[in-house]
Structure formats: C-alpha cells, structure tokens
Image (cartoon, rainbow, N blue to C red; front, side, top):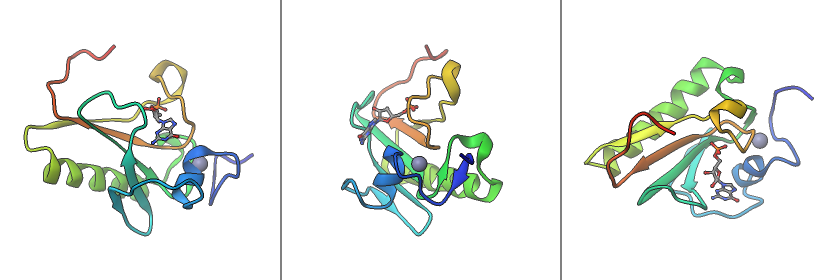
Length: 116
Ligand code: 5GP
Ligand code: ZN
C-alpha cells in the first residue's frame, strides 16, 4: 500500500476525517479537522489531522504540513492564552499509535521538559 492516498478504509483517522465516525469538530476546513483526544493528557488536548491519509509527517507534502501546523497554532493562539505544546509523535520510538499524520495540541497546564 502506498503511504499516501485519499482515504484508507481501515484507518481510524481517515474515517473520522471522512465523517464516518462522528466527532465534534473543534476546527475544520477543506483539508484538515480537529477534535478532542479520547484520552486527554491535559485539560485541553486536541488532535489536528489532514482529511487525506499520510502515515506520518515525513510522508506528507510541505504545503499540507504547513497548513496543518498553521491551523494547530492558530487554535493554540486563540484558545490557550497561557501557552501550549504541539507534538507530532512519529514511529515506534516516537510513541505513535495511530498511523495517520496528526498533531497533538496540549494546554491548560504547565508541560514538563524533557518529555517522557
Ligand atoms: P499518537 O499516540 O499516535 O501520537 O496519538 C494518537 C492519539 O489518538 C492518542 O492520544 C489517542 O488517545 C487518540 N485516539 C485513539 N483513538 C481515538 C478515537 O477513537 N477518538 C479520539 N478522539 N481519539 C483517539
Ligand atoms: Zn488515514
């Protein structure tokens, strides 16, 4: 299977992006959408995904990555005045558990550094 295509039938985030699994959209445009993480790690924990399938950031085109990051940062700027963290876990060592590109936006508390 190619690492990128429009929508992958057995991909959880493709289904969410296509509206097949309903979520409350916290942001949406023609290319990306955002929704609350099901297991929040902070008072605010939002996932930003492209509606098309890319396994991770290394597979995605620069323009889409920029758009995704721009949308996530705009959300943080608008909603998280105290600051926020944007995370892109990638691969096994990175702790990625869903193989569809996504950014975590975490806020509402102080973040530790270094991350675990
Ligand atoms: P990763 O570990 O790949 O960086 O992040 C995947 C995230 O997706 C996890 O934080 C996990 O809690 C979240 N997640 C997994 N399944 C679902 C789901 O069905 N709905 C939502 N809203 N989030 C999910
Ligand atoms: Zn997908």
